[in-house]
Image 1 (tube, rainbow over the protein chains, first blue to last red):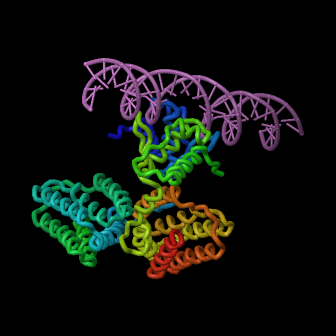
Image 2 (image 1 turned 60 degrees about the vertical axis):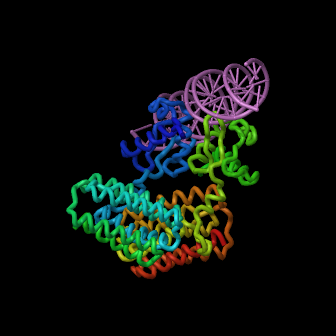
Image 3 (image 1 turned 30 degrees about the vertical axis):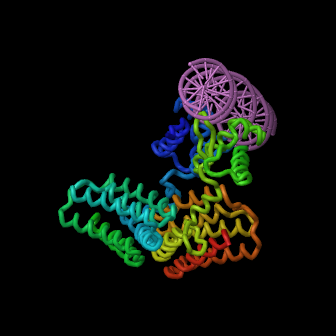
Length: 225
Length: 225
DNA sequence: GAGCTATAACCTGTCCAACAGATTTGGACT
DNA sequence: AGTCCAAATCTGTTGGACAGGTTATAGCTC
């Protein structure tokens, strides 16, 4: 349907360049001509990519001088964020606590029947994956995502996606998410999710928020006892 | 400092075109050559504007056919307040309510003196910008960002950045964020921020959360009365 | 050698002309 | 009327060109 443009490739390439070469905030990128040669495209394509990067707040162009890194993608904290003492996974759970609990509460009050069907479908997928002892990581995320979507508020999805992609990275780097789980853990995880979905279906706002908080609390404990 | 590019003019012009001519979703825009002549710029400039518009989800280009309206700028704002009966709640504010209130609470309890200094510096920058009647939009965001950073939890920053970059884009496409504010509004905005910063300095967790919630509530009201 | 200056090299911002490939349109033909 | 083909139109991409701003350097002065 939507074939990718060359400028998409250049956009991704420049982001990759910043991350791989570890360019700090304020560092100068290669010139447009240099980037064009690097990616094998014309200068106009590089310009289109740079315009988007600037619009996204990642780079900044100064006429006559060059393009500079304004804030690094996804690692925008580098500037003054002192490395936290909190384990990174705990950190993301801290945010998910408030974010997803509120999402569950709003989903319970505002869900349409279509959104409820999406949540149910996500629950089915998770159940099937868990019962067949598959990793189920993707299905877990998808269910949480659909609950966030059921709020009818895209902002929840935006925050959720940003957070989760980070969590995923950490998990892939650290914990082995595909290790097999004992059956009682599987049953517990299923019950926790079913509690949440049930409360949303019953339009029980406080129950949904509580069930979500409980689930996240237990999940964090399972991840790092 | 940042001289406007011609493509900014074209971007705004096309948005204006969609709004004034009341082009519906799916309607075809004039061709790139037509738009170029309309705004008195070259086709390359129009292309840069269209690339940004597409990246912002407002238009969509189909090769060989033309550029089409994907979602109207004003409706994107509406998309962020689908709240059925809730009194005019901006969707992103709904998320910021829980996210930033929690960040303020944690910042008050966990802040280091270095992080407090960063917050103070951000407050100074905002004060200066507001008192000189500058747009102050960047400074406002920066202060909120530093409060999120003062939690010591990178996850707050990640969620905050994701949310804000989207809010910013919508604002650029829709509302005029640089309109001048009456002096009493400036004073109010200053006081609200100072309340938050003060509570964080005093390590008053509940006070910080409350002040943040109040500030966001008032801010939403200022944005769309 | 230190400091200042002019100049050359480089860079972004913008324009123009051109061609490839996809889509739409209109007319010719049946 | 219905089908098919060709021309017109449009986006995607390239290369070259020039204006105007920035940076570095060579050279001059003291």
